[in-house]
Amino acid sequence: MPGLRTPLCDLLGIEYPIVLAGMNNGSGGQSKAATPTELVAAVSNAGGLGVLGYGFNNAQEFDEGIRRVRSLTDRPFGVDFMVPAKFAEVGAKTNNELRKDIERDYPAHISFVRDLIHEFNLPEVEIPDERPSNSEPSTREKVEVMLDNKVPVFACATGEPPQYIVEPAHAQGMQIIGMTGAVRHAARQMAAGSDIITAQGTEAGGHTGNITSFVLIPQIVDYVKPRPVLAAGGIGSGRHVAAAMALGAQGVWVGTAFLASEETNIEQTHQETILAGRSEQFTTSKFRDGMTVRAFDDEIKRAWDNSGLQPLPMPLMSIVNEPLSVAARQTGRFDLISNSAGQVAGMVTERRPAKDILMSLVEEAEETIEQLHTNVGAVTT
Ligand SMILES: Cc1cc2nc3c(=O)[nH]c(=O)nc-3n(C[C@H](O)[C@H](O)[C@H](O)COP(=O)(O)O)c2cc1C
Image (cartoon, rainbow, N blue to C red; front, side, top):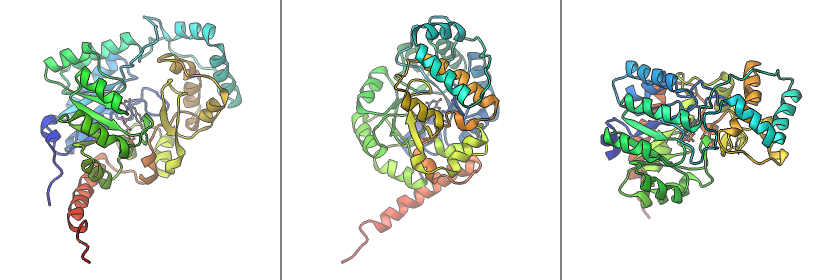
């Protein structure tokens, strides 16, 4: 049987073209990573590429995370964090200073969250007065940490990577993965200098667009040729992996399916929504951070949809909702926080070690490709 190997494996120095999607904002956007160091190392040790999603962590935590991955594996791995296309003008302001600005400029947003806190009997909580993790100064600090640690792969979670990342990263031989949800994004990723392009369909968990994987992947493959494409959004079985290869992808970027792993650090409630939820229960909202996020359906998302309010740019929206998500976490109301996951959760039903998840994807993909040779065109009249 032919092995599941593509030129991308050689480019990244991995055995199988299966990449763990970097996932930071675990349950409700807290700093507990959905892709903790143990999961990253498990995927890399099993022959895929583990990617550490640490966008909500500060630079010191990020540095510690990278060092810990290195202590657990000597195989290649990547890191992933958001570089918002448009930062709100926050300068070096802290969360509390920004909250005061928001209270002045967007009082209806503050009242919306305050009313929900009362409605659900949640406590008033103290928010640590730090600089927001997804502001421009914090992002630049993480870039320094990534370069100093000579991480082999950077995945730019949103938007295209800016030149202050691309130039030094390429100078030290790093590969850059750029995310797309539409062909126009691919043009921008090429211009920015991304080496590997992820084509992610709307099915995906977390930040997402509105075009399905089936429609998007071949368009991106054709557009960015000969650059390799990772297919993303709805990859949860080896049949999906084989289909992605048939559409021209050289590998897959898998998020939700790895959230059923034993190594992930998401809350139990969150993992249960993935193991028990139906595909149609994973819906989109802009409430969490101002961008479209796919997560398990909840009462907060429904209230936001009915509020008539418009989302604010990063990082303001996260600051607006933080008192609610922190209070919900502190009181164990994990059903009220954003439990991100994609539609493929509807077919993910078992909690397993990450290595088993990865090997099932590989083995089922190989069998599927083999069966296609036998089955397609084998009908005689
Ligand atoms: C809980 C969760 C957290 C995520 N956090 C991030 C993140 O921090 N950075 C990022 O690039 N993508 C993030 N994503 C998106 C994933 O990297 C990936 O693109 C997506 O999960 C792929 O689709 P799938 O869920 O259908 O496999 C997140 C997704 C989920 C489900």
